[in-house]
Image (tube, rainbow, N blue to C red; front, top):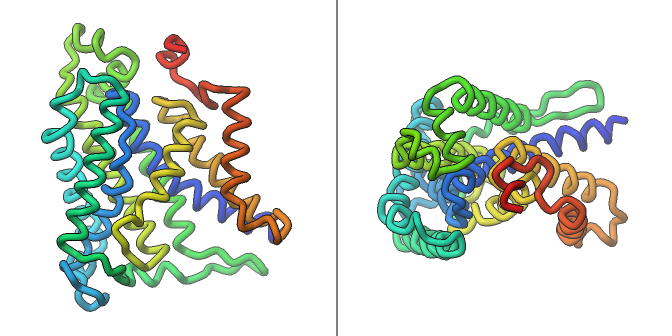
Length: 304
């Protein structure tokens, strides 16, 4: 029973991280039909924003030495500005293009961000001891829960609740929901398209920044591709949950994480190196029976 509870907590913590990234991807897809493959690089940028260029040690961290609240705000601002710049310089010029064109453009943005990080910080991986106190383990009998897992789950729940309130209780949120259902009709009815798109990019930037801080605290190291694996699993989560559905994106993130963690815990030892293959096989089987995802949007169902 202890092992089962421990596995459940591990799955919830990993699912929280996947859900954060999946929500950022789902926000943009819901409004722009943009599959933003540069999202992982925004997460990477958020982590690198903490350190001085070419610094290798924690002692040389820049924003990382600030008080926690101020540091979180600063990293969020940096990532939000980067997200808005990617829209202003690239995506705003091709909004009427096909989704495949937008996706290819996102690969180009990803390439630019990765190489920009290489030019400024170099190719050498760096260490960053961020919030080391979160490695403390809370013990309940034989159950050991790292404080970082609790913080990750709590941060995700708070952000999900805040996003839900924004979308359901504010004028801007209602406009975003209308744009996600039918962007052209929403504009005819007075929704300011550029403002809604800008808000979607800004919110996705905030989610990427928080994911970056949690990921860096967990791994303790930086590389120019550190956000790519998280983005990949987050994209799978949005597909599993239902493209364009924010509730589906969050549900997909937890579903993928539960499959991954439970397979790692309960697969025979000789099969554990192939865990991701089993996860992807489960995803394929699920999509064969439910191609629209777990919680598809009305707009997606109508298009299908």
